[in-house]
Length: 430
Image 1 (cartoon, helix red, strand yellow):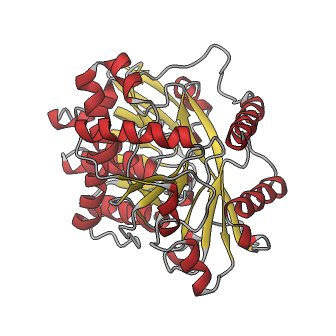
Image 2 (cartoon, rainbow, N blue to C red):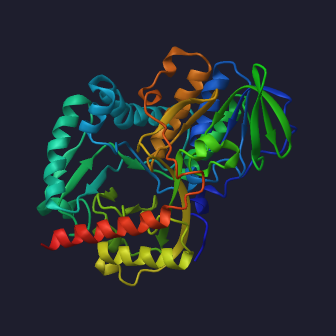
């Protein structure tokens, strides 16, 4: 079983541009060469700024090329929670950016930059674990459609087999404009676009720290120090100790993904009758899809909330696959890998500054559209462009006194979420 993502088979393993001497000065240093950092660099370079993008790994080697390859939109806080925290006008902007503007931006990037990433507008089906969830979701969807131009419709349990080859759910919601892609090709295409406009991107160059020196910043790296007018941190779930303020505000939660060996065509047609992307509402949060060539099941989940051993996590994924698709009880995995998502305590992404340093992160598992969108917005904000305004400047970026950077609490959270899943299973059977 291979430990690299399936996506790298076709896209190739992420590679860093040839090593070049670091400049002594740059208008902006961007830390993190994933979807956020590269999108910010693209916007900044087009605004005439000199930009240096640095990554501790190869550009795109983190979650940007390791995720499940689904793209669309969504929100984690309820409409009522958003209204209560931000007021109705800002809540509406947050919803519009999360569902519509970010997706539109991603589609425009693909078209304008010629990024071929196996994108297909397959639609996404979100299955609900209980009948109560389904009923509530229908009312929420009606409210949402009254606020923003989102396209979606409810699918009752009797019709869900036309969307997804399982009877596990109590109906669901279909978002027809969502789709799938090869995330490694997506971030590679964005890297090429960023290099094409003249930004400098260097991999395998860890940033050790940033300090203020007059009106500029000294960015210390393994390969020397660069003086920068502005610094943007775009490291999300891979934020290290050099950026302690952000590290205390981001919870890096692993997501485990596997790809099956090739399955017969009739099996794939039964599992995915409309080639949908699939996700679900329970705490274990399984998400799955056909591979871009339609021959494999790609299945992800929070098999554990901490960096569990491969044997434990892959066994948990097999158990979940059997639960969703009993006919795949003996499925064999050809690939098994993991990546780190970045959650915030507010369950919302954030763009802003702490002590003068810019941050854009916290996508909570929804980065293929939101990361390029908020990276673009961050780049415009740094450039002083009024079009950089985003409602996600107004979202909080809180920490907790007991989170000092290392997520020691995640094994405890894992037990809690397993307990909640068990309780919901009992409610399903009642």
